Structures are given as C-alpha cells and as structure tokens.
Amino acid sequence: MTLTPARSTVAYFSMEICLEQAIPTYSGGLGVLAGDTLRSAADLGVPLVAVTLLHRKGYFEQHLDPSGQQTEQPVHWSPEQVLEPVDAQSTILIEGREVHVRAWKYTVKGVRGHEVPVYLLDTMLPENSEWDRTLTDTLYGGDEHYRLCQEIVLGMGGAALLLSMGIDGETIYHLNEGHSALLTLQLLERQLDGRQHFELDDADLESVRQRCIFTTHTPVPAGHDKFPLDMVRHVLGDERVALLEGCGGVHEGMLNMTYLALHLTRFVNGVAMRHRDVSRGMFPGYPINSITNGVHAVTWTGPEFATLFDRRIPEWRRDNLYLRYAVGIPLQEIREAHAASKRVLLDEIARRTGQQLDPNVMTIGFARRATPYKRADLIFSDLDRLTQIARTVGKIQIVYGGKAHPHDGGGKDLIRRIHSARERLGDAVKVVYVENYEMAVAGQMVAGVDLWLNNPMKPLEASGTSGMKAALNGVPSFSVLDGWWVEGHVEGVTGWSIGGPDAEGDPSRDAVDLYIKLERVILPLFYGLPFAYAEVMRAAIALNGSFFNTQRMVRQYVHNAYFPSGVPADVVEATAVL
Ligand SMILES: *Cc1c(COP(=O)(O)O)cnc(C)c1O
Image 1 (tube, rainbow, N blue to C red):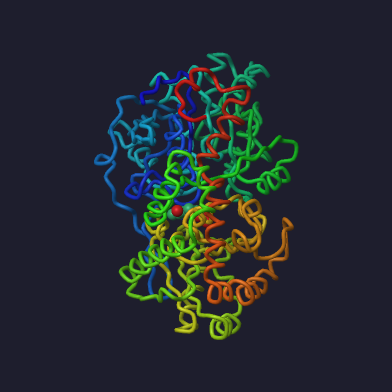
Image 2 (cartoon, rainbow, N blue to C red):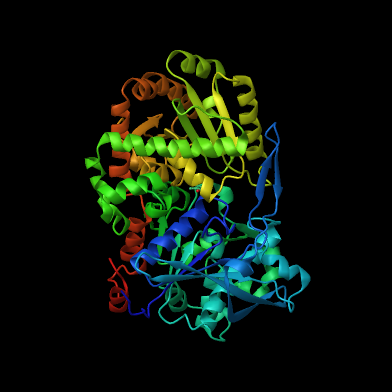
C-alpha cells in the first residue's frame, strides 16, 4: 500500500538509538527503547523523523579478564558503509566558534513499507576545529564539558538541521530524555525572531511548549544532566544563559536539562505507572503522566517462537494484540519452541566461552547494564544457601551479561564480584558471564533461559524492558515489584515477585525472599510439574507479550501525547492502523 505523506511530523530526539547490531550507537535500555519506538512507528505509519548523534567510536567493546576486570575498546564501524550521506548541514555556535554539523541517514522500514528516516549528526568536517570534530565520537564519553557540547550538537544542531530540510511548520518535538532539551532554546530563539531575551513573554514560552513533549526515563539523580552556569556561559554566551534563566531551565544555580524540559513541554511522561508516581515525588507541581514502555515484538521474538506464532496466530506481526490468543497454543508446542531457543543459546555460550551448560538444568538469566542499583550479585548474598538449594531441590545455572560504564567503578566491582562468586561456586552452581552484551546476544539470552531475574533497588527501575522481551519468548520473570513488573506481574501466572508491593520495600529482605521462592515455588514447579511451568510461560506471552510492546506504546504516544485533541486528518490518512 502506498500512503500519502503527512504534513504533520513528529521529530524524535534521542542521544542513543539502537538501530541494528552493526551500528553501535547505543549503550543500553534507553537506546533499545528508542530503536523499538522507531520500528513500531514505521510499522504503524506514524509520520516521524528521528535525530541522534553518529557516535563514530560507538559506545565501547567490553573485554573481561578471568577475574572479571573490564577493559574497554572503541568499536570500529564505518558509517559510510551502512548510512546514506545527507546534503543538508547546520551551523551552531560553541564558545563563539562556528561548528558545522552534517548528517547521515538511516531508514527504518515498517511492515507495510512506511519509512522513518533517522538523522545521525556528525561534526567530522574539515572546516571544524580538531576538537569540534570529536564531538560526535563517543556516546557518554568525555567530561561534563564534552557532554554539554554534545547536547548542543544534538538539540540545537539537530533542530537547525531539520529546519534546513524544511521540517518545521507542523512539527511536534519529542524529547526522549533530557539530553536533547536544548532544542527548546533553538525554538525559543526562532520565536523571538531577533527580539532580545528580556522581551521573552508568556506567549512565546507557550508557543514553544505547545510543540514539545518530554519523556523522563530514570529516577536515578545522576541520570538528570546538570551543568555549572559558568561553564554554560563560557560555551553558550551570556545572552543564551539569560534566555535559559528566563524560561526555567536554571535550577539551584545549574543548567538543569530536566527542568528545562519540564518547563518547555506541554506533556511529560514517565515510562511506567510506578515511575510516574516516583517522578511526581521528585518534581512536585509538574503534571507528569505515564506511558509504559514496550519492546518491538517482531524484533525481540526469537525465530523459534516467531515460527510458532506464524503458524498459530499469523496476525501477530501486523497487530501484536493477537498475541493474546497464545492462550490457545498447545503447551507441548510452547515447550518445544523453548527447548529449541535454549539450545541456540547454550551453543552460542559454548562457542563464546568454551563452557558447556546443561540443557536440562534450570537456567536463570540476568543481563543489563552493570551498575550498583541493579544488584546483579544479589543471588550470591549467601552462597551456602544457594548451593544447598541447588543440591537438594534442583540444579541451577546462571547466565550473565552486561557492560559497566567506563567511569562506573561500582558497576565494574559488581562484575568482579560475580566472577569471584563463580570461582567459589565451582560446579555446584555453574555461572557464565557473556562478554560484550549487545542486541544480538541479548535476543538469544532473553529467549534461551528458563527464568529472567531482575532485582534492582526500589524504586530506581523506571521501567526495564528486558523482561518484556523474555515474555514474548515465553520466559517468565522473577523480579522485584518495580518498573513495568508492577503492571505485568500476576503471581504464579506470568512469573513471580521478589519482596512486597510497596514502593520502597526493605532491600535487605530481598535476598531471603529470592531464596525462599526459588526453593519452595519455582524450582519444584520447573522440575516437578513441567507442564504447569509451561502454562506460566504461555501466560507470559498472552498477558504480557500482547501488551508490553511498542506497538501499543506508540499508539498511546500518538493519542495522548502527540495529538491529544485528535489525530490530524493528514496523519490519519498516512497512518495504517491508528
Ligand atoms: C533490552 C536491553 C537492555 C535493557 O535491559 P533492562 O533489563 O531493561 O535494563 C540493555 N541492553 C541491551 C543490549 C538490551 O537489549
């Protein structure tokens, strides 16, 4: 079907976007969510363009020595080979220097052929100073000053580039996290149109606000960028700092990207109901909504389950709601598809690590960014207890993956502690740590384990998405009640909880709870009643796979955030299934 292009456009800005395995422009959950959002927008025919940075040196490639000591190497990739050059350029001012910004284009194609262009901004141009050329090299690299300059390239350079391509009039700007909030400064200056900063009035602010929406992604304070005003003044100049002060972007003497976004957007949301409540507590007085995250179902369903769904519920690719009918799939077919996914994972682990895991043993998966609040080593709190459960109730093996940010000492410690627990456990509980966790291996892990473990410190998990990927592959979650799991958890039906439902909880009890439930509920079910376990697997698909996907999520953004007073006619015309 050919669709008429829409005039109204959503411009989606994100510091990281996970486009495909060969393009290392993401670090974790935020980037994966951004990529999944674009894939679903393309499927649905939403008129959207995306802007991010090129990240020529990627995030990093992770290597672990036998003690779990992480070292990092730049990732080598050639944008020229996988992206199309774009003619348009923009120019921004950094410390009074003109910095030229070019872009590369990647096209996300939807199921019906609708295209979402992604512009990856690049400052590697001969006319830029040597230092400015490095501004689009590394994701979350460098110091505060480097980061501020990167955010200027993303927000201001990006908005200016879209304008130069004629994308402006009806555009709605979606700030995916605060990193791109400086785009509002561009819009304010356009609005002022030569008037002075002190002439800024409420109508100007309102006009910018009406065109912007903001998604906040974390309750962790370090995830909210702040920059000292002296630095901002040096980089952006007095005039612009005055403008930022005038519009509420300065908080406690710092340029605060979250406050800037809160003040200059008309719709703000957290990424799960619980995260909305936590964000309201952090930013009292701001109306914060919730749109719960999802994952792109076709991307994250492994080939084994995709084949099964194609046979039993072929409509699922076009409309993820059909996954609800997974309840009708015979349990034996669920078990077979899962056994095949498990073989693929165990073969891949053997190939990568030389360690052969046993396909008949309960395999627990834990993989995500290695950072202290995620508590990857919680299950090792009491090694004697764990060993005793494995010996008396049923064998356990554990598969880990995850990178620590190069400056995150606590995260690096965590990886070392997991390695040292592995040494001490020996053959009692086999543990493998898969290096360089990224998109492709993540897909195999979420599909190939028997249980997906998640035990962050509450209330710090805004949403979490890896458990949603697991659900699509019939892998139940075993998780603390935080983020999306507050909504997806039905005890004993879609998986199991660790700890109680309250927002804060008692973190010191979580390990005890984890052991008790593993010992008394999960392992006995897995080994003693395999078809009852398969029923939980099937319910995870039907109840959670059908809801926690980006197709539902993007529809919610369209109706609640982008076009709350009705989807414009040109968008309806261009859109396939809204
Ligand atoms: C899904 C995914 C994440 C996010 O995992 P969470 O459990 O939500 O933190 C991070 N990294 C990769 C490579 C992923 O695929």
